Image (cartoon, rainbow, N blue to C red):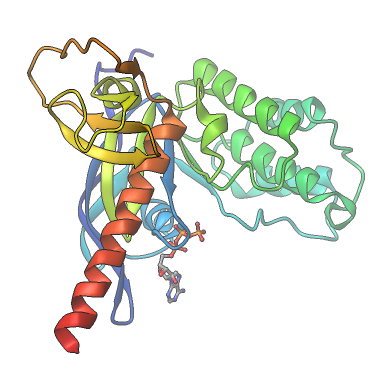
Length: 295
Ligand SMILES: Nc1ncnc2c1ncn2[C@@H]1O[C@H](COP(=O)(O)OP(=O)(O)OP(=O)(O)O)[C@@H](O)[C@H]1O
């Protein structure tokens, strides 16, 4: 089956969600193209779980709209499995509960991660239980797979293997993946799209290569300003040295920087950490201004 170029898998328009009076999400607008692996990142409490829950239809939005095209599978942070069920029982449950069920795919996932079919889920390790939840999600052949902190219970090798398997599933089925994580360093080469949340608002979103290409890291002699024009996302100074992460102005040729300055393309981790730090500093400044105004 061919897919229209640029088809959208997940869309949000002015999406907002509040718990009582407190907004957990506000004015979120984005489109996630089909077949992408999108990383949803943000500090604790930024609104990642809330966003996924609304997109998966588990929570109603309080303003705006959101939707996903096709069948959605959502694996929450707690990796729900029945403790007294074996992995094989869980697969039988999957077959009963899902409109579409690919038993072979689900079994292959469990075999790949050496999860015994006959052991009660309660007796599996946290990582093993997570694999059962993933197998069920993959077996349901979703068009959009949403995973809340899928890497949290896994050891470093398992994290790499799970992300590799997910990429394999994307290549084989054309599904779209949205995964939230704090382990940003392990998303290089996995995610090709980014949604960055801060205090319930979407700070950045879009194609990862494009986003990173618009940013440059500079290291050079101590200076209050970077060697090229642009928005300073992060500035760090030590006695004799300054480093900057700069967002270059759109639609202009890339600046040529010479002399003592060294240019470095930022990694995903550099970019995300700099953005989160900048937001935290801004929040601290706003809080101080509020306190001053109230004093
Ligand atoms: N059921 C709830 N009732 C009230 N407030 C909630 C509820 N769930 C989340 N919140 C609040 O909404 C905000 C966003 O929470 P959410 O769990 O979506 O963030 P998160 O980015 O997933 O955080 P983490 O990385 O810690 O999992 C937080 O301020 C949180 O305290």
